[in-house]
Length: 434
Ligand SMILES: [Zn+2]
Image 1 (tube, rainbow, N blue to C red):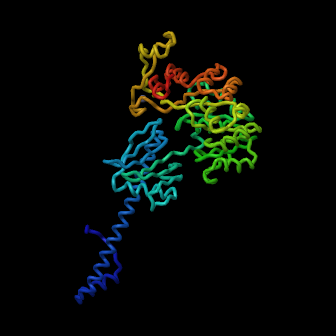
Image 2: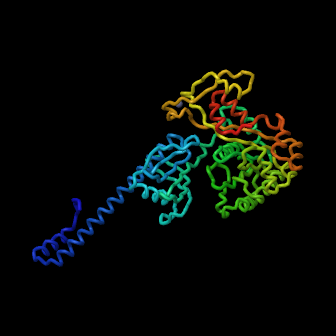
């Protein structure tokens, strides 16, 4: 047992001395045992306090570092050799730290307790919490999952009102802004934002909501989960309705909203209600997980929404996905290669493109932040007729003219590569070319 200074009361000491004097072994050993227990308990308490402050210190360092790197997520992940801390920065994961073996479980338990999750079970759980330390505050969403190597934890940074960009800040190019501004000023209709997971759809929807006149209009959202709190908007989590968006939406309608954001449309019932709202004078925003804007119409037809309904309800579909933005500090221009010239096929107009280099400002990656690639679809009556006749994606694509779809996101990506916002490789990595 290591040396340990303990403080005991004088009367205890005098009894102990007396017992030793009279040499009654049995009483002496009882008291010695009790002292040993006392010392052990003290040491255990000290260890827990030490671990507790170590855990808080570790969490503080991880959160502060991730915030500096503008990470959107943190992943705590037990691995074969170490417990990794990975941050999602500009869409990609990067190792930023590790947690020593003795701190990992206490750290996971601490995070769970912050979100009022059950610390006695390793069943998957989720929740959210706010944590303050050293004058900084973080709002986080947490989810846990048991892997063969131990519990993993995913933390998502929740946005605040100030994190949500204005429409004019969504894209360094201005092409999309007039379309989005006009959508935000509409009185009625259904507007979809489509794209794969983590393509910035929620940010676009929140930006649209921020641009709606919240003074004269009642704005309601039904979300799962609520990702950012916007002043002047009534935000409802579908969790309160057992995760059923349609049920939450029906309840929300009784409060007479003018503008409604529906987090995501996954089922026919929710889609149907949104259509009805749109054709009865409401402005409705929602999300569909489809790869193309045209695909959104096919998805809705597939889940049983009548094409004539789609024609009346849907005014615009915005397609988007994100590419990494070249670091403005270190990007370098180069003469276009022969292969790239053939690929761009623009009669040799483009002479140079830009590529990543790497500097301290971008963590040597050559990229900093992300920018969206957009597509706007405003279908014609011919488009709807083909849809009604059962046409497929190719048939529908053929009907599109410039006024229906001013550009595809592939074209937007190429423009952004030419303008030096991103690299051509980055665009080609994300977009499947036809
Ligand atoms: Zn750089």
